[in-house]
Image 1: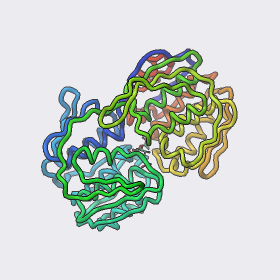
Image 2: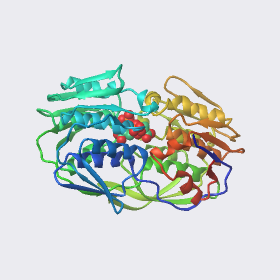
Image 3: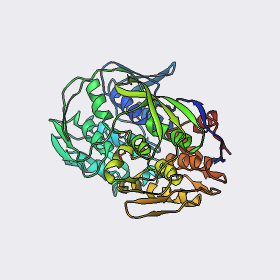
Length: 428
Ligand SMILES: O=C(O)C1=C[C@@H](OP(=O)(O)O)[C@@H](O)[C@H](O)C1
Ligand SMILES: C=C(OP(=O)(O)O)C(=O)O
């Protein structure tokens, strides 16, 4: 198990492109895998989660090659995998692939690492079974075996705000006998919808209703993946907290369902400006310029959370240095991430001497001086590891993490990139 340490740091300065978007990278590979012809994905995220998806697709007979840094995907005919599909730590990978594979009539078994094994899969299996899927599971958890099944037309109202569940149903719908409609009460990231349309699927969005009508021919595309706003969150918060800092993060994707953290930080007083707005991979992107800013506490309502669902641990770190008490509502979905992120976020704050309180679905953080000096185990959760290290940069004493290898699931080279900006983060 690897360790890393973050020590109190000077101002952060410089320019660094964070790794590419994880959500888009998974989807680009999966859509390439069922499209006619060739899909070329450049600047894909080459991190554990996405490589797990690539490896699972290869087991289905899909050709995924890396040539000069570009991933070349050829769908061709799917076959029954000769082995269990191990999706590692990737919730998005396993849940979207279950939907896709169900639509392709696949016979296959999914498994994962200890974190993925404890995450709920019933949220995807329930609607897929209602469409006609035959599947075996272990009380709603992995391993899950899908059996070739004919899927029906279906309308599903999402019981929770989840882009993964929405996407699984839509991807299964590609192989259904008739249209599939998903109704979402709270909008979530729409990369699946955007990418399905770009590949030629018949998909319509009408307010909160998304309808996929199967039968259209999907054709391979050439696309580039922009930088991941969820990864950018870590150097952004680090720069805001270190007096005198100014950093530029090029090509950060600004899908409106992904920018909740930036909006909240601005409400707290953060200076984050968008430069050179443009389109990459069908999404708006900008170079973000971040200057150190004194932060004030805010109240975050539950309705703001889906647009920053993966950024709550790092928001809590920002709140630890803000003036006043920050309260964040609507955090129930955090309990079913790579770890129980509500408990883990409270745990990392407490380890650094920050006073916080949690309830069933809320978190309160008292901002002020950060003592630091604690050690936190990631428990297979990359975002908890990175949030702890960013906190350590602004603490009086270093913060250490164990299980630092988890960071590579979404942000390979995290310590090196942060060090290039002047942050005192080292792998131990
Ligand atoms: O669809 C996606 O790419 C994702 C959706 C979110 O999960 P939920 O659908 O469980 O909210 C998010 O937490 C995850 O990191 C990526
Ligand atoms: C929750 C996350 O990912 P996933 O659900 O894909 O494992 C994440 O990256 O924070």
